[in-house]
Length: 343
Image (cartoon, rainbow, N blue to C red; front, side, top):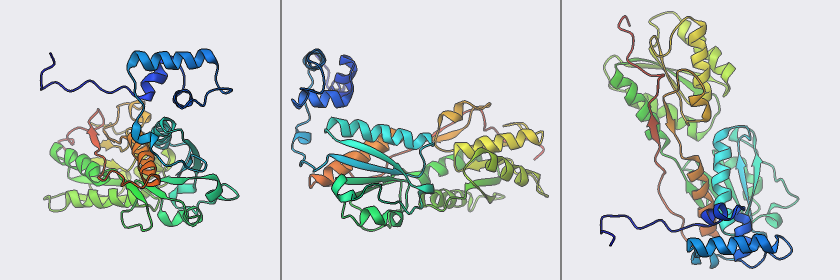
């Protein structure tokens, strides 16, 4: 008998069925929706049905009640296709979309500031809704003007005309980083900031300065840099070599900038973290590829995509989207330590 304190077993999902049957979630949706004929083989359909029965999977009835969209297609707009964070956001959004028989088209808009052009002759004719990650709402005028529901991810709460919003607690993440370094004893900081003019990076800058405010002897200087390793290295190298007492910690807006800061320290003959601590943000794969591994803030990127797609589906079905920001977590690794005694 299961005790009251034990959690109930997790309900199997279409992802579990897909994994057990060795197929995609889209194939599971086709088979369970009886739309597989002519698209997948009888043998594949039978594997899906068997996996469904073995796992005791039951389709989400709320999903079945979802209003049928004209195209069952959503557009996910991101600032860049090369950034791992946005790839993971897409993975999460596409997984939820597949469970509901939707597809997701991925579309880049430079730097998140736009303007994002309509990638179709008519977005209204081709799409049921738009999800935008780390973008400015006014950069989406061409798409929003098509009278499509717009879900914003990691975006300014002051933006208007948004159907739903999914944000990360970015400010708390930067507070966690700064408090970690303050607790270690650091008081002289460089904030290596992304030069991209966007809400998410403005929040990081404010959070760093707010965290050190009122701490005796604590000073922070913000140094902007383009969001790439070379620019981060050059900016950090100039900041570390500047006249006056050397900073003992570099707080970076992103793991990419942090990798550049680590390279700058080595070029100046400094050791990380013995002479200078370096922290990142995002917890990209890069964070554990550098040596020492980066202390950084982990963002649940896939969950952001999942929540974003779920919010769009709710809007299309006339239901309220789930409120609240997603928490982020500090991951302490080898790139942070107490400041050198001589400092």
